[in-house]
Image (tube, rainbow, N blue to C red):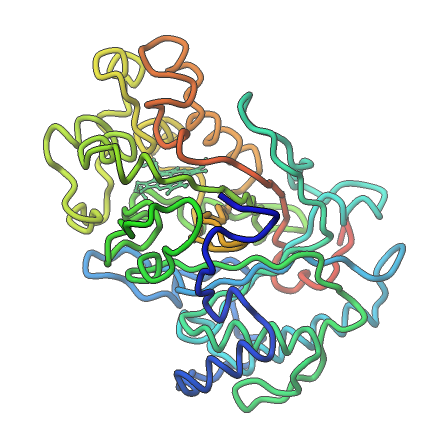
Length: 422
Ligand code: HEM
């Protein structure tokens, strides 16, 4: 347990979790400067800020693998009232500098800059043609803090040194990155209200498991990409980038982004639940009965396989006394049987606690709310032997502490956009 804000353990933070110039220096000292591919003319990059897949490697089965290291900066616009052209140019110049310095791919740098409902409040109307509600609690059993920064910057790279250097450069603490000069920074335009970090990918959760919420026995499997021990984000269980893209209006080629912070408590998960219970609760009971999931789940290929057991979840849960997380959320798929949100979530040790930054993209925030409502499984709990949170997927092991909603404008509108660019 935490005691007066000090973690139970004096855990060894990763360089990205610490952040700042000294963490970057220590990281360069220890691992050297990685060979990072240079960027390109920003005009040649895709109109969609969230077009990341082409720059991500694929695993043997063909699933895209997200970059390993992540930084989220919650930003406040420093000027009262509407943005000035000068501020817009400054933000554009700073982001163009990063695009010239680093290739738009996992071993380079990918990023998005999104804007909250609080940001758009300074204009007369909400963003044109996009559903961007204020964040809200999304279950009867949660009471999250609601994030209201103006903007959210998400930096992602396979190299810790790259996310750290890009962050320092944007803060105005570095003149160049990857041997490319920064034409500008965010200094004087954006101030950092909060900083969050995380990682995803085989090995990283095991390396970083010395935190509150994970038993001392260090149970996280060596090859697990996330703290809960299973692979996530199979190709057939993700919405495509097309599916989450805004289709029309001035923000066409944009997307909405939801970011929550989920705290994990994995004592029972790893110390009392059996392997079969973990598979039942994460995927579905039939997967446990049939021994369908080996290890972290690489053997599933490109499909979690819960399509069949998602048909009659209430009836099955009555029989089994358990409802699976993927089984329930799969009920939110659209007509052609594909999910409607694109998950780009990652594990975290922020605050010395095991957590997960759940970041997802979707065409409208309503798509996220619909998926989350399936995950709540209130109907399943009401009509079967499953509890509100007990044996109801993974709800028992997590607590949603924060929620925020953002609009990712298309690339050419990402610098302090007006609410109606038309
Ligand atoms: C601690 C938090 C979470 C963990 C560790 C987690 C992990 C997983 C895993 C292992 C799967 C099965 C493999 C896959 O399809 O990728 C899955 C599926 C899924 N999860 Fe989560 N998840 C978490 C939270 C959430 C949240 C908050 C949502 C959104 C409401 C969500 C939505 C989904 C969806 C849509 C699927 C795919 C369902 C389908 O096949 O149609 N997950 N998750």
